[in-house]
Image 1: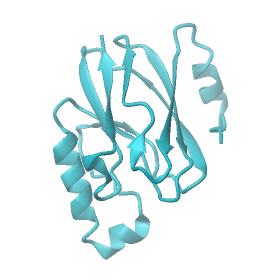
Image 2 (image 1 turned 180 degrees about the vertical axis):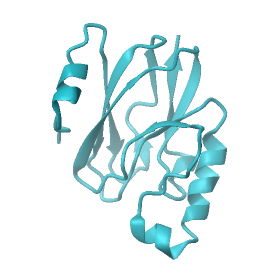
Image 3 (image 1 turned 135 degrees about the vertical axis):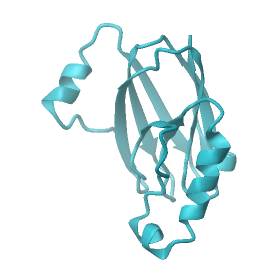
Length: 143
């Protein structure tokens, strides 16, 4: 399972000399990420390959420091709206979300490409499928 490069822009991004490549997968039937901490420099280009080999859908959402619970609870609330459940993305509308993958079906993968925040800190990431965020999370350290 590998994410595909979909455009010339993505291919160009991947040629940067100080590109940090991170690969994060879900642990099958455990509701956990296999990487729970990674470190990047401020404004460093990052390519995060997210792999879902699990039987359930998962995503990876990077948020502002301290926003894990707010975003997780907002995703849980989305599960109460049948229209939003049908869409199946569970990405709350919030300016505290920095970057996110789509909700990945089982046996799929996606790459996130972004510049790390310029402000050092501990930036949480979580799966916002309702209920998963309570244990399915990690930290991107910017220092």
